[in-house]
Image 1 (spheres, rainbow, N blue to C red):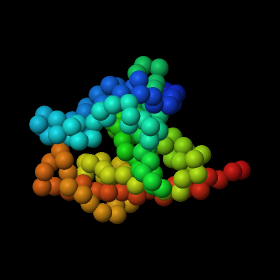
Image 2: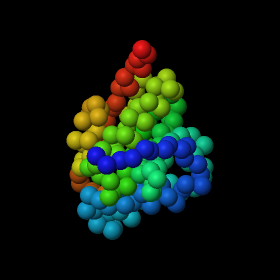
Image 3: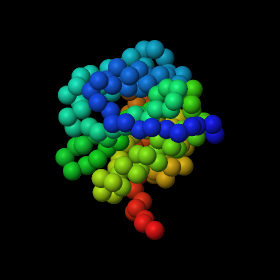
Image 4: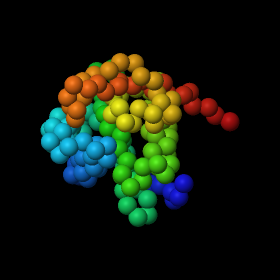
Length: 161
């Protein structure tokens, strides 16, 4: 692992093009066709600043560049991890765990006990390694006829010394 110190900053509506760029690159990492990526972005890309009225997230940055981001979306009384993307050159270097740890710590600060999200099948192993469990499936937009796992993560109780 060669990560330096990461800085986390709150996502704002000004980050719209950056996070959509990272989202498309991240999904493209798994080899989906341009047509399927277009369909994914049409469905899940963030279209305008109104999205941020019911969302909260953070961007991780190193001294060199943006490392990744995550966004929680609030739906009634539920919290959903709506996006979790890492800059693709950094996959497999430990940055995903650092981003996940920050995500988990933010949940603890907010007092959230659990959240759900759906995963690309290629990312399932990462999320299971982080402690999430598969609870259902849903049809994939990027690969019609295939299913994507729906995951649940139980936030560990924050422990104080």
